[in-house]
Amino acid sequence: MISEATSEGDLPDAEKPNHAAMIQFRLLVAYYARMDTVADLDAGIAGRWRLLRAATRFASGRGNATPLQDCFREVPFETIEQPFGELPDGADEILTRYLRVKLQGLHFCGAAYYDVPFCEGFQSLTLIIPSIFWLARWLAASDGRSKLVLDDISRALAIADHHHGYSPVFGSGSFRRRVRLLASSSDIARLLLWYAQ
Image 1: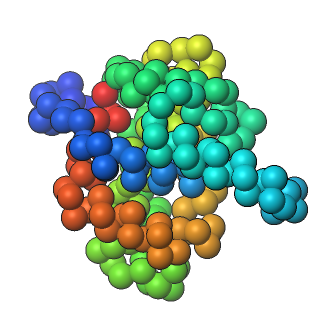
Image 2: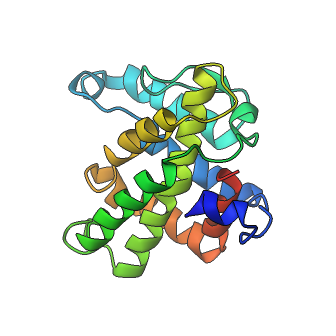
């Protein structure tokens, strides 16, 4: 998949997505990084204020990423934006298997995914891959590493999939607008290439 194509030189050079796309993408990743529990829902105004502060931090991309669950640590956004090298051995198989299940089960559009049309659902599913890479980088950086290991990819995929197709936020108008904006600006491919390095 990605690592094989990279080693064979089939992929073009990664071009950083534009500033507006990076803001939208970080906010999308923040949805994936959350861990909503009953305690979070009962946190009231204090919990909402904490999420608003985290969203503001993710939108700016400055300072440290605010941990939204216990597996993450405060890490500078600029650290997460640095290349982490090639994907670890086995990452392609895990990601391919995950996408195959989603595609074959049509768990990215229609009744199984908030009644989203096929193309929009496919775009949303595609965005989960750079989101997984971003979360994997955050996990690695939280452990003080600048290279990914297979466990980072596996854990990031589990974190992202916990929400994808299950959290009502992903069917909301704001989330769907974010996906459509990234698709219309052709930034989905740029995000895939940028975070695969």
